[in-house]
Amino acid sequence: MRTKKHTLRNKIIIWALGFALILALVVAAVSFSLSLQYLKKNQQQSALTNIQLLGNEIDDDIRVAMTFANWICLDSTLGGYLLNVENYYDTNEKAGRRLSVTTWDHLNNEYNIVGIRDIVNRTIVSTPSGDQYLQSLSGGDTQSVADISHKIMESEHFSELLNGKGYTWIGPIQNPLMNSGNELIIPIIKSVQSASSYEMIGWIYMDIPVSRLTSKIKSFNMEEDEALFITFSEGNTFKFDGENLVRADKQGDVISYILPNSGWEISYLPSAKALQNRMNYYGLVIFMIVQIIVLAGALLSVILHKTITGPVSQIVDRLDLIGAGDFSRDEKIEWDNELGDIGTGINNLAANVSALMEKRLLDEKAKQDLEYRVLQSQINPHFLYNTLNTIKWMATIQGSDGIADMSTALSRLMKNIAKGTENLITLRDEFALVDDYFTIMKYRYGGTISLEYITDDEALLDKKINRFSLQPIVENAIFHGIEPKGTSGKIVIHTYQKEDKLMIEVTDNGIGMSEETIKSVLNGESNTSTEFFKQVGTYNVNQRIKYTFGEAYGIEITSKLGEYTTMRFVLPMDYEEDKK
Image 1 (tube, helix red, strand yellow):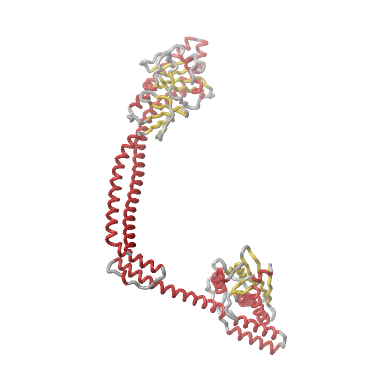
Image 2: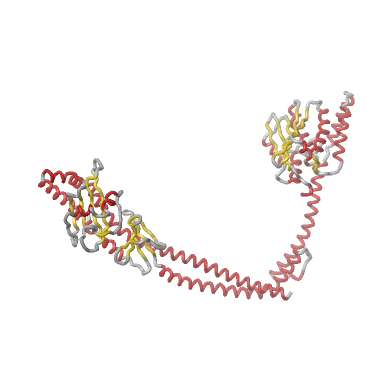
């Protein structure tokens, strides 16, 4: 006993400390995971807000440039210039110059009004050939260049941008109009179409200096390990290196925002170092919480050891004895405290279990014996009385051989009723019982009823069925199906196999049954007595089948009012009684 107590004590200590440690680890893991998710989400949300502000600021500039370009495409004055200027110069150079000056004033006024001057350095509107064009400059370092339209048309990306759908973005490129230096621009090249025929009548060129973008990006404060990317179109991604935009691929777990007007995508890689610094602080807090939980577990193990180790050990010993079959009462575990209440409850439970087991065994045996005796052996004296009256009537009036047939059938039937309480018999023997009973009924009804057997396979006659199962069904078919109809009747017993089940159908051509009647018969609500077994009707036969073979088997009823009723027995094909 001493060793066992020490073992229990050690288990309490181990379980308490182990529980505390597991709880601490779970709390640490969950806290760390939630903290990491929270910090990441917070960092991502903050970053997304920042790049949205930056992106919207950039996108506003692009929207202004796109709006101005759209105005050029739709303006009728500029459209007329592109359609007619070359013809004017060919026929009347003075008229051509006048048209160019007038249109340039119109373009330059709009250029100054809408604020495009602060966003775009140069705007050119040219005929398809490039021979005639208009140019607006923002001033400053922007200079006019000779033969400017043809230089633009000869640049590397002109055709790609001109033929693209809508606005095509390729990102920063070297300014094709600069002979020296490394000025980077974002070009806008768009075709101008005729309003009537959608024929190209000219093109627009605008250059947005990259410095306009980088000046805004520089205001976006970034740590050393952070990065900002701008994707102008698929395959055209650039990274901000602190001064300029250089071509690069996006890397890491970036947060992206698509500009609503231009369709550009700004991607931001948050600082892993900043996240790690914040996680270190949270980790310290989590570590302190884990230490507190472990200390609490150690204190709990000491308290448990001092207060419940001994009593629990004795209760466990008592439970072991009960598990081994000793249900005797042990007064030693009935202390004057809560554990003593448990000990008293265990003693009472052991006594109750012992008594219940004995009572259950006796009840089950008595129940089965009673059910089989009641279901198999209740004989209705009215049947014997009526049968004897029939024999007397035939002996008095007919003087026929039927008296001998009925007497013989009655003798065999009573002999089978009296011999033992065997539950299962072969289908062949059950058919013999039905034949004896039907012989009596046939003479009683003067031959107005007939019985026919249809057996698909003679081997089925060796299968087992509950004794006196078919006779009550046949009797019900006569008294409650055929007799109320007032005409001659016929009963057919069809035996066949369906998959792994033995099917026996008893069909009469009587008055039939309604759905409500079928339900009441199967539920035992119909209280109809027969002339052979008193209240041994369909419900009791169905219950006997279920008792013997299981809930999957029993009787099914199909019927049509005024035409027929079929009682279908569903039985197992192969059954050994010793399996039950």
